Amino acid sequence: MEEALRPIAVGEEIPSLTKTAYMPIDPQGRNLIHTDEYAKNFGRRGALIGGSTLLSYVLEMLYNYFGQNWFYHGRIKVAFVGGGAIDGDVLTAHGLVTAVGPEEAGTRLKLDVWLENQDRAKVVVGEASCIQPST
Amino acid sequence: MGEKSGFEAIPVGMEMGPLEIVLDEATVRERVELVQWENPEPVEHLHLAPPGVTIVHHARMKFMALPDLRVSIWAKSEHEFLKPMRMGSKVFIRGRVVDKYVKRGRNYLVSEYETVDENGEVLLRSRETGVYVE
Image (cartoon, rainbow over all chains, first blue to last red; front, side, top):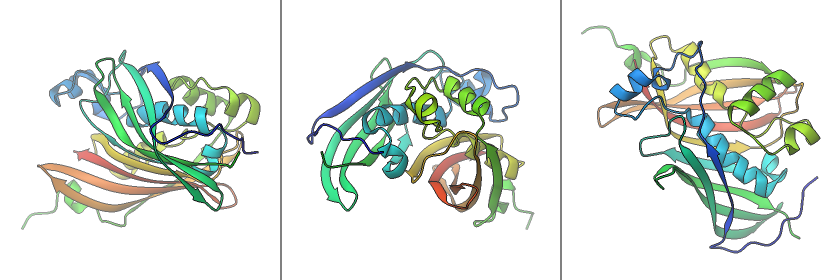
């Protein structure tokens, strides 16, 4: 069942979401960027948190706003920028509405989304959109 | 002329998988814990996997298909969510290398993934670009 959401205007932010990044050691993991030694040689501060984990922080923020609509109408396109994120970074996901337009299934909201660390450096930037049914 | 290196030898169009994933409760909860998913609605009330739970397996598929790959770092990723994934169900991910290029001395691999349910219905479409290091 799709939920009705309160109207939101271009220029408004949906509620942000903050998490302290955490990545346990995966003994079966083969990707060396998740090891301190390789990541530091690669110019990073330490073992990088996986991109799919960073993406999930943004997805939870979007799910918190769009609810079950996200399962059927959610779209996201992001780039991983800056130096990435490491264990212990405090990361906040943001979503700023950039456009609202009608579609057959309802009204689609478009947002700029980003994930920034405790120094306000962006580590993920991109766009997302989802149908918000008419209220 | 010598033989092509690992990256040069990867054929565009190469298929990866399919990978079968059983979304049993333990599997979903393990991922929920790892990514610190706090909203209880999907798992506790709807018995659905939170969005994006299977995306981590795309990298796993790349490492399985490309034995020379040592490091993969996402540069870009794009996902379209079409239907929810039910807890207790099986899903299948099919992947394909769709492009590769070199930029500023780094190798990039572009791959697409389609996640389908047991009836073949598409649940999630993804396109990912990653730095490829041997």
